[in-house]
Amino acid sequence: MYDILPRRARLTPNRQALYDLHTGLRYSYADLNARANRAAHLLRERYGVQKGDRVAILAQNSIAYVDLLFGLMKLGAVLAPLNWRLTARELIYIVNDCQPKVMLVGADFAGVWQEMCGEVAVPVTLSLEGAQIAGAGEYESELEQASAAEPPLPSLSGEDACCILYTSGTTGKPKGAVIPQRQVFWNAVNTVISWGLTEKDVSPILTPMFHSGGLFVFLTPLFYAGGRVVLGRNFDPEASLRLIGEEGCTVILGVPTLFQVWMNSPAFADADFGHVHFFISGGAPCPPALIADWHRLKGVTVRQGYGLTEVGVNCFSMTDEEALTKVGSVGKPILHSDMRLVNAAGEDVPSGVTGELLIHGAHVCLGYWNRPEATAEALQDGWFHTGDMARQDEEGYFYIAGRLKDMLISGGENVYAAEVEAVFREHPAVQDAALVGVPDEKWGEVGRMFVLLKPAQSASTEELLAFCAGRLARYKIPKQIRFVESLPYSPYGKVMKAELKSEK
Image 1: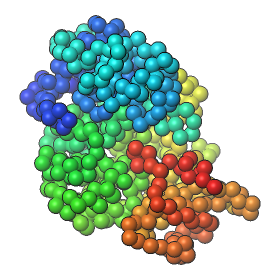
Image 2 (image 1 turned 90 degrees about the horizontal axis):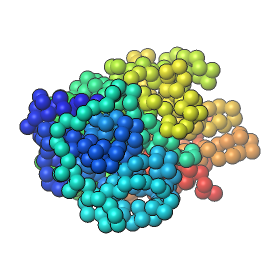
Image 3 (image 1 turned 180 degrees about the vertical axis):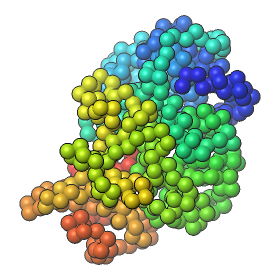
Image 4 (image 1 turned 120 degrees about the horizontal axis):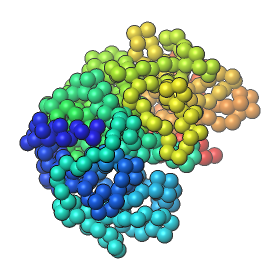
């Protein structure tokens, strides 16, 4: 993957590759490659970054992420982007785990970095965008002084790590997924081929680049294809809707909450989607009613995506027609990938039966940083155990049933939360729903559903239970329903169920 920008700079040097909304600057492929080269020279020659070393960044979306991703790949070094939504205490754990040689800090996070400094040992700090940090060099000014020539390459292979991306840590301390260069490359190839991307495609990045979605859903695939990226920073519904039309965006990533916010925006009715090929929803299941509303109101397609940091962010593919006729499905596996659904004994299950999703291919990660036991548990005989439960219909379309650990056992029967939640979201008054298991003397465990209603809509417990009858087996219907004014969402639109489970 380290060679993509040099090849693009040779083939299409003057083609626009990236528009940075924050600075208003537009960069060609030659510009991006020159910046990556400067970053590589700066980090190696001035700060001693060598193959295998880590470089961390704590900052809002910026061109620096692109510099580091591609510049470090040329060194065989590793980018470790930090989730700036975490507390200083949480970030201290991650920094001490990956031990970066250099830390880049944006202006918004100088205070957080100050809190961390006494608890971490990072040899070099660089400031971004005017961050006031004692003793830190200024990244952009130092970058300008570095050579733009291609740096001499160490011995590199597809197995060399290029990123460590930390998971949310909902079941304990965060784990750093080690992303090799081949995973980034094959995610790009699979996406371009299976999703039909071309050099004419344009995509906005509206999600944080400390996540795999911001880095890899469209950015690296479009650079591979020779397309264009519009780099955003803070999500604003009205501004982003205007941006899609003004920049002629063709493929757009969002999460379910973002699609709901967009649809509720006063700018939605006049939004220009004339260039859009498709939207794709990731991070969490998108309610079928929301997909239908977007198609009815704007005539556009919202596809349901699926991916994991560990196995690549784009694992399935579907056409626009299938997104409407197979609502709830994530489609069929991408071209260069193998998938299985297995039971608890590791045996393949037949069509229609729910099993754990296993994925094999060059787009699978190396495992977890400093976690040999977790790596051995996840990667078995080359197959990555996703922990997600899914079923496959007779036509080969996959449906995600939910996390293996997001399953409750009621009266000896398995109940998958995602399946039950999907039924609740079909009710016209329900905006979102989240199921958790609670102890029960008779059944061992029963479902408690947290329901968020749409604005100005109403529904009773009895009405929702009646709605479930005939749509769900009796043992799957929640025994408790709680109406809430909001749900706790992660940055990627997933409900943080640990917070719901703590409620009495």
